[in-house]
Length: 493
Image 1 (cartoon, helix red, strand yellow):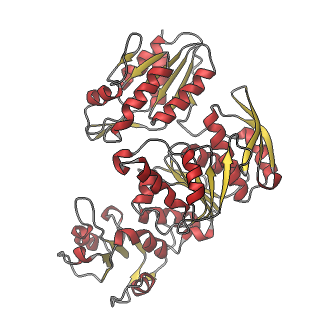
Image 2: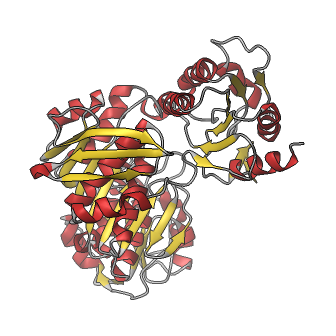
């Protein structure tokens, strides 16, 4: 995705911006990418070191596609390639975002921008904030797990946070389309892999931190350190922290930037609830903000974790320039993010929902919420993804076994791993006794859950939420929990 208007920059001026002493020619460049799949004529190609192959291996291909110049490191400069003007810098991977931001005229500078990080709640908080802007007729943009929204247009993406060159290009497209308010989910991977370099947000926000991604970060300390990078002068002007989370309290002490605090119950926090009462599929809420701001109304979301998401979204909305009275008036119009406690209702006599919960904490939160809402049975289906943090699998299995009346263990996205081996790790600490079940095939597991359901019960399918595919042995097959749940309900006698 690129802006329609082509703006030419000069390769020699880029050298000055990067502080390079290389003598490079005056070559016009009209775009930038590190992926030959996205090369367009006039592009600067970033030949970056990779985990398996150096990007310099693809310079010839980039030149064939129209690339006019290259930035790489010493290793890349020593490889064979057709002659293109070249600049050699010490760490091009770290500087890719800065380069892309420069080529695209630093698009975030024209917007009120919010970057949200945390283990759980990023998507819902971002979605609620985005909706509040839209309800007030702001030209709004969004990048995250659900894809990219530019005004009324929606686009699919592969990552929660795209690669640096793609990210800057998307934001430049937003700037060209006069987006004034922008929110992005910022993953720990993106911060650790320098995808956010060149991006400076008006506001950064932290939701919480619980176990996830330890396959990548190794330890919770490393995971937290990656998230904390967003709260530096490089990335943001001001921060908002959920201090109900212990890592939020730690971040309060470590943040390089001024911060405001948010809490469900701590009256010392800058933003906190005065009270909330569960009613009719949501909450009547009253909250107090900075300067005595009072927001009251009906929040049409269930689950106390959504109280956390909502207060953060409202605090960010005020910080971004919205009138608290308008927020209160629009509160009842908010909707949950797709795949987050999303209801599937075909008129069946039991409740059926889908949720993205795929961490131990998220599974416990969702099941605790649903259990508190009914005295009838809670039937839950859950799997764990392959090629991801293995240490959370038994924790998720234990949460499912403890909190569901009927616990059904199944596959999620096994990817390159054995689905049976993943399930073995999930149930390592539990005894699976009838009517609980281990069902390898996810479609069969969903059908079993629906077949077990009686009037008044609740069925919830956890782990995939909005996703529309299931990856098995490197192949992604069409699979949508919402559609599968609906089909099972339709087939139920």
